[in-house]
Structure formats: C-alpha cells, structure tokens
Length: 247
Image (cartoon, rainbow, N blue to C red; front, side, top):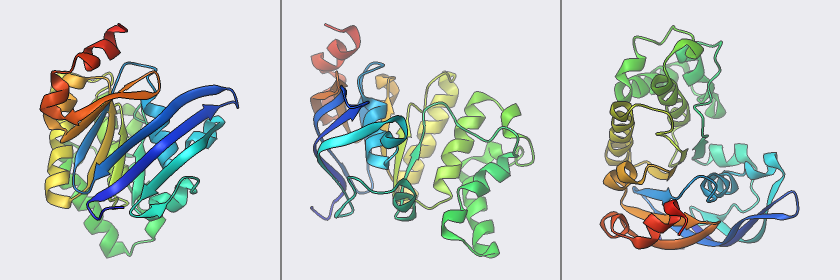
C-alpha cells in the first residue's frame, strides 16, 4: 500500500441477509490529506460502502463476502468498529444522529472518551471543535434535540472530530439542509483537510456541491463504480448524469 494512501479498497462485495448483493466488485482509494466524493443516486450503495469500511454493515445483517479493505497499511476488512475509531477511522452516519436529551457539549464529549484524555487535553479538544464550528459555542449548553438540522449536523461531525480521526467517513452531509448551511459545512471540511490533515470520504447525492470541494470522485451506480476521476472530469461525466437519471 503506497504511503500516500490512507484507505485502499479492493474488489469488495457486500451482501445483506445472505441474499441481497448491495455492493459489487468495488475498488476505490483515498489519499492522505484529501477529500474524496462517492456520488450517486439514492440506493446506489453509497451508505453500504461507508458502513462496510467502518465495520457497521454487520449491525444491519450485512457482511463483506469478497475483497479487502486496507487502512493505513493494515487489513481491516472485518475489524471491530470501536477498534477502528481508536486507530482514527470514524463515520458520521446519515441523518444527523445526536443524543437529543444531552446538551451540545455533552454530545461532543461523548466522542472524546475513546482515548480517555486528561481534563486539560479534553478542554483543548473542545475548543478546537468550537473554533471550527463557532455557532456551536453559543449553543454548548442547549439540548441538541432543540437545535436546527444544520446545527445537529455540526454536532455530529464535531463529535467525530473530537476523537482526533485521520479519516472521516461522512454520509450525506447535505441532506435536508439549506444551501447556505451546506456550503458552511463543506467549507469546514475543506479547512479541516488543509489545517488538520484530516482525510474525508463523503457519500453525497448533491454532486454539484461535492465536486466543488472534492479532490477526486467516484460515481456509484447499482452497487458498482461506473466512473472515476478528478472533480472537473467527473463534473462533465455522462455516467454521472446517467446515474441520477437512470438511463
């Protein structure tokens, strides 16, 4: 595995309930310090791909029956999700999952204890999150369930980032959010890549915004990669259009 790669997936197949083939012969890679977009219509297999990488597919009776997933040069094809978090691979699930009856700050803190940081280090990590998500600073004592959809997405991302990951799997970050909030979140992702050297693999239906920020992109259709290339190339791809139009 080249030193420049943080993630390398070779020909994986994922099956649900022993019979439903959701991902077929999928090969992709993510360079260190990069943003890679996984594009495609609803049901194309984007979320399944991310859950296969993070080890969460098994929670939905899914299993990787073929292929290999390499993370930082190690085979993590069947790794325990908590062990992956310890090594710096985290997923932000689709749907802005927060603990609604905990405060914003308590939600953020929940992501930190995997490494059992000291109080001083924990405070420093919190301030780093508030630096990137300044609107959460004023909401830190508010219950997360009473914040807006965009703010809950920021909480979910912030909770992942406080664990100090090297690779973040980000599932549909723009879903249900106003365009201005979407741009704000993607700007934060770009800044984290540039300033903290965090890599991102993001699954996104909104190809237009994703391609403005991605370094590289894959088009997923019916569980298979139909095209790949740099953002400019993929933005002009007929296969990208076909994947959404079903033609």
